[in-house]
Length: 149
Image 1 (spheres, rainbow, N blue to C red):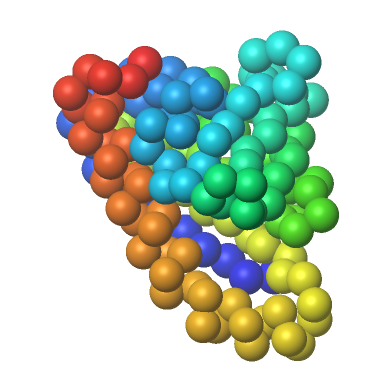
Image 2: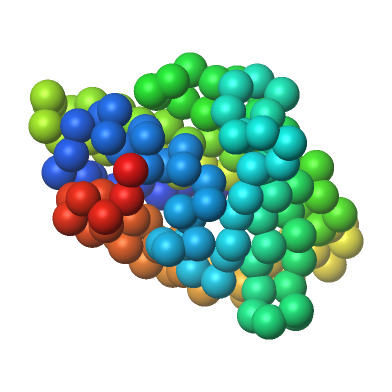
């Protein structure tokens, strides 16, 4: 397993951040190269399903997820069930005051291809982390500007 965890401070109340982060379809506005949508409903609550396509044009991969924990407005855990991405992910919102929050994005990825996957991810990880960090910064900016809810 490969653990990745990033966080971003947001000048917005926790509920506002939660509402924005669980607006799955709006993630395409801030998550680099990714389009997200709920499957069979709104993708909320334990058992909810979400899909995300990451890539350019038709070159990329589909990430299928099932929500395994839902503690609104604080935490959502998912199990990645796709062919490429396996493991778990967590979205956590922590109130730091009445008007500020921290959003924590973490993944525990089960890398494919054994040793080859681990070695390959060593080279891919810096770019992956950079892309997620930039995405989280964009998310924070959009929430603070009131452009996501």
